[in-house]
Amino acid sequence: MSAKLAMTSDGKKFMWDGKVYATDEAAMGAAESYRNNDFDVRIVKEENNVLVYSRRVVKEGVPTS
Image (cartoon, rainbow, N blue to C red; front, top):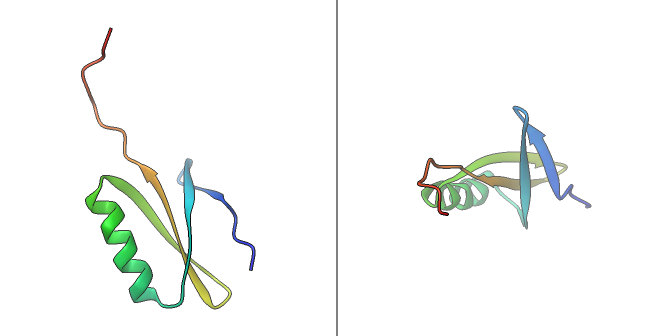
């Protein structure tokens, strides 16, 4: 299986975490961990495997000079 390193969803770029999950439950556990660390996550089923794609959520911050 050759997964795409990046995908676009809702006009946003997501990067594959590099792992192939055998079950939905395993992928959802990984996705929850990413969400807890302020990532936006997409779970994609490809062939008999499940892939997790994520992107860092941009937060408003104070600009540094």
